[in-house]
Length: 323
Image (cartoon, rainbow, N blue to C red):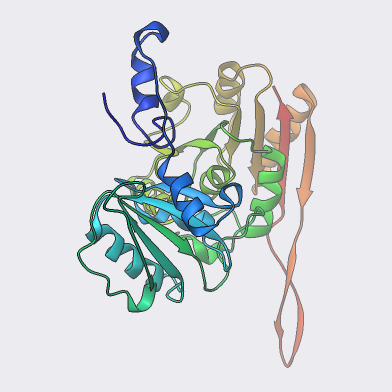
């Protein structure tokens, strides 16, 4: 098979190696489009985000969107580059510069630059890459606890401060798998995936399952988040073992027992409760299994007549434990 550039960086090499025995293939890598682009522009490649957008949505760029940041994207064709310029403009990054890099390293090599919001380059040849210098408003925060308004939801969402504490307790690590049980809007799963992990969101209501999928696409993590439409613990049957599990509400004895028996040793469990009955259950399990029991009581400043006062939110009891 002949494939240009480095076959193991957004190339065909990894797919072939997964399907062939080690003695059935040999690779002869050449400079990748990323290295050719960085060399042409004088960019430090280790400080540049790299993406393969041949068949992936532009939302994959969201984690990299930040004023002053840089990215190199492998594109499908010329119309895709034009669409990318429009997408950047819609996201508030219309002042960004796109360096359109055609046939790098070959006799047809051509590099042209244009502003995203006034992009008018035509006759863009393939193979093509787009190197972007982002100029615009701030992108996604890297810390846990994105604003609630970033997510579509029907009110069933782990609120921002509690979500930040929950993700801290879940302790996401790159490549790890989360089970998000009773996922609601999927906010916990999505922030887990933004930290470099993968997630399975289990949700019984079809409308909420659809919302989770829409939110995942909006954040560019739909390839990392799998939605299971069904009840727990029955939904556990065919799922791969997770590194962590989160129960956002509705925990009962049957669910906790099934989850404990299903998880591997070393897996992390975090469960939140807002009702007295579920709080009593988590207190009981804390006595049985140990871990940490945390009560979260938050208040926000709100109008009180002509002045302001503290408006308390419902307290949340959180149990976290390692299996």
